[in-house]
Image (cartoon, rainbow over all chains, first blue to last red; front, side, top):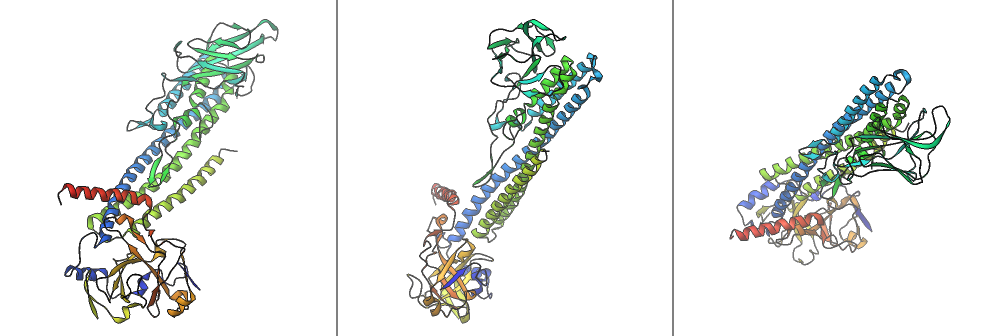
Length: 406
Length: 162
């Protein structure tokens, strides 16, 4: 038995069977003076080719426009994320400058620094609300809801031992719950809340009654005596902290009230082939709240917390924000890397589609003899190229994310 | 030599260009001599024009250009009848069917490939049961959109009174 496969063939096509004495032009020339019929049934290839080219051209035009817009959005998003990343570098500088005893006792320095922190917060908020052609860059499911005071939420509660040189840690969520009730009042935005539990005074002597010391944006509120648990502490303007069991002496609890993400979970996927889609832009949920590809950091809350620490003029508290600020910076860096890779991928696909579009347009305009195999092959190559690029994207992302695990 | 084809008019050819399918093609036993020429420059489609019955011409393809991992088994008897000893001397093509008015349903008969010994230009249609006699050439996803366009064109012609 003889087995015939593509690999076993001496020549790649049946053209070896026919001598190259004539070409199609000769045949067509002959057909013009003969009984050559022009009905689609008599020349089905021509009819099919026209159908195929028209169909492919409209598809490629559509995908080319889509990928062009997506690439443009990625480019703007990458710029905005880079800018946000730089703001967290500035915030880190603030922590390093004010998180030591050099400026202690000089409230004006801390007040000025708090204004810088607020400016950084405003810049990040502005970038988070960036739009392109009226569509938010970081709006999952193309939400048009901006990050603003109309949609507030509390950040996760952080814990720190007041006066220590330790850093911030996430508090036990079963023990502490922050809440904001928008029906009660409107706090200043952002708000930074600090609640400190005291069983001793500054000299170490036991207090007659254990108390919670409350501070909002650098302003001390009236102390609240310890009561039965769970105890809800009213911080005004709809803000509250519920404590289910007693904290440790000098344990300070922080939360912020900041604009929350209101959009869908994901941006629209971008159709780049008849049966293939690429992920869209990173979402506000990822950028601002650290979901998905983020690092779980509430980016606005971090700057709000730093501003609060500066308003309170406590250099140790300022120093405690170093780790969250660095995590926020790394979150922006991760998302910038992801966006950069997606942008390169999308631009590559867009270039391919643009080339295809030009060829198809030319083919239709000039009525060049081209058959379905040629067109299908091009689409197949495009699809394969995109698959390869998708693999590359994963490899590049793995590398870029590894850069931060040191 | 020359023939008067219904599709291409008068065709001149040399005798050494003829492909001999001595057992004919399924359904066309009288056509034993054929000419093969490309549908267009660098096209993957070819015309298989009958010399014996000029009104008959088929569109054929090299199936390997359209489908990956094909493997046709040529039985020893078939190989012997074509004096075929080496796979290097084989070329295979399959007949394409394009339903009238439904070009998107273009298909090819992989179950009945035509095997040709290029050394002596002898060929025959063999049976390969593992493949479909009606293998679509166009992916289903593309067929649907082409079908819509076809219907649109028909509607347009009807609306135009043609």
